[in-house]
Length: 192
Image (cartoon, rainbow, N blue to C red; front, side, top):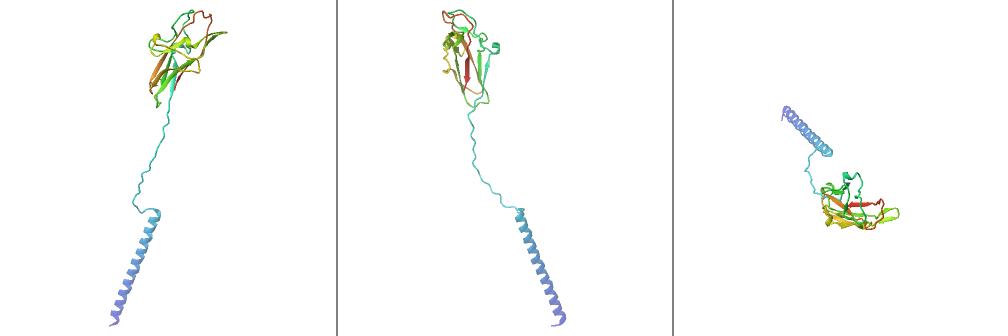
């Protein structure tokens, strides 16, 4: 073998060795880059999904608005009368509007009942029992129901749905022989 041929083979071997080393270095660099992407989260992996059951509890909620007929100017006064008079109405109620209106507000999520009660009328030492006052649902004194003394309530309506308003009409009987005077009381209306 001549020296030129040995030099050529040696040069070729050195060239292959450099290529091999460069290729190995490139693989090491590539592996390092992939490792860096994996650590930094740049390498995309398959997404995972999971169904998670959730729940919510909605509480029962009722919002009620009770309004005295605007014609009453904030009070429910019965018409004046004589002992023995019957079915004396509250002065401000009329055919289309009772003395009091109860509304189950639209935000409510349940029906309500409308109840009423009251205390006995008094004037000095005299009294008129609240049972002499009656209420009804349709402005017809013939269908009235006598009130009970507080704390006992009498039901006027049941099943009043959200957004619905109901009126209550009141009448009073003045007992025979009742002493004269200006009698006052408190009448309560509730929606629940």
